[in-house]
Image 1 (spheres, rainbow, N blue to C red):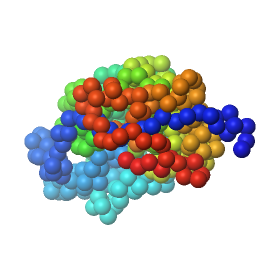
Image 2 (image 1 turned 120 degrees about the vertical axis):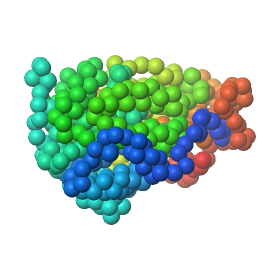
Image 3 (image 1 turned 60 degrees about the horizontal axis):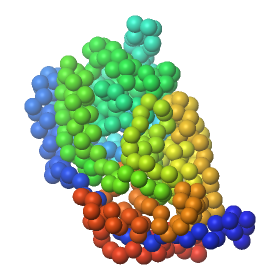
Image 4 (image 1 turned 90 degrees about the vertical axis):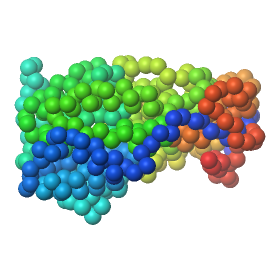
Amino acid sequence: MDAIERLLFSVELPKMARIRQTFDDTRLDDVPAAVRQALAGCPAYQRIQPGARLAVTVGSRGIASLGAIVRAIVDALKERGAEPFIVPAMGSHGGATAEGQLSLVNELGVTEESAGCPILSSMEVVQVGQLADGFPVYMDKYAYESDGVVIFNRIKPHNAFRSRHESGLLKMLAIGLGKHHGAESTHTLGFGHMGRLIEEVGGELLNTNKIVLGVATIENAYDKAKEIVACGPEDMAEVDREGLKRAFGNMPRLLFDKLDLLICDEIGKEFSGGGMDGNIIGRYSTPFINGGPDITRIVALGLSKRSHGNANGMGLADVVPESFVKDVDLFQVYTNSITSGATPSARTPMHLATEELAIKAGLKTGYASDTTKALVMRIPNTLHLGECFISEALLPLAEKTEGVTVLGEARPMNFDAAGKLLDQY
């Protein structure tokens, strides 16, 4: 037993009970049909001419039904006689390399075979304009050389700033389609200017007449598609703004406002651009956003495989196990952080030998007295908040909280011989 183990040996862990948090579950039963319906009612889609080579943007986030939506868009464009191809549009993600971005798109379930069209990945850009203050505006070279661009993205709240436009169609224009150059330049002034730049750079790109169509998905609290919206370039800014309002109302949340400890099983880019969604945990990588629950300590147990080592957001946690750190690719993290300017997300938390020790350290520092009475919650990640665990001390509140159902009695946390938490959802 080393010194840290001795220091934490006497920390008692609270018993944990399984619960279900219930949110509005309205969803689309047939997502491809919803895409076709949205496009059929969109005048911009009807304007597409036979033979047009159209670039379709695909980003790096874990969008629900991504492969099905992309295939439906591609098939619909072909029905108009167009010749679609995909461009990865993800700013600096994938290590800011063409190969890395293609790999990410494939990993998310979009391949040339599944989409039914070519995927052309490049980090080359063309400067297509500039703002009044000289700020450059870039576009992916393949997209620029096409006959038109179809902007596809999910509309949702951002985790580093508040604005009329956050994550959505205009952000895909300003940052995703601008590749590393666009992401880097748009982040240069910091997140305090991000909303303005997304709107102005996006507007400049819309003025190039290269953007022919927009398709957006808005998800429910269970990471399922709830709406598909299609629009022309003339309506894109309004669709983006109004969609963001609805997306805010759809978000899941922790139904407990104060916690001594939050245990997050996994962080990752497919759950949130920030690894852990600050809108859920009440912690952010910038000072330009606030609100959310009051959580004293956060322990992150693992990094998702789909993140490919990009542990952006780990700095929002207080403690992690050594196994977490071993999975981190600092090149991926630092590329992301240097580009965005959000360095707090790239900080390495205190890391201890096992998951058990990490949890005990979170408890000891977050609730120093009788740790068996600590207010603890355990979640799979910050995107999937349906089934969770809560400590015994939270049960009286849970029984009075609307939307919370207790699924079983509280029982001790279960670890294997290597100190890994075994309890499954």
